[in-house]
Length: 147
Image (cartoon, rainbow, N blue to C red):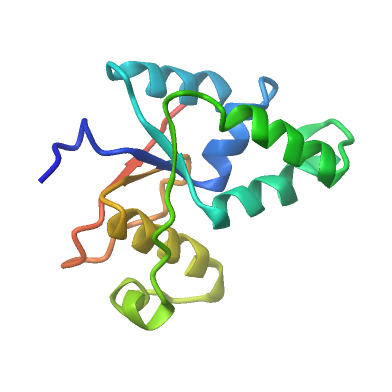
């Protein structure tokens, strides 16, 4: 079993946006966290990459007007980083059912699934959202970045 320091950090969408955009309130905190370990591996998956493109195409979020194709190009540059890993294992929803039992509403569904993705890939979910709580008995690992 990997130690928590050797597990890749799956950046949730907010952490990924913060990493890419220097004007984001958590940009410095995410950078410091990724520099904390020697050779820190950080990860994305299809869901976080899509969310990144969606949010980064919204000028209200990033304070810059970018077309989705431009954001995909930015993402391509970002994930060329030598410490980036792509998590290919995406569990089917029925396999991830234990991550959904504690949910109260629809706004928690994506976060629960990202925990399932992180767990299936031996990763720790890195987030800026202190409201995400891993369900008991799943073995999920989460780390919340504070400003």
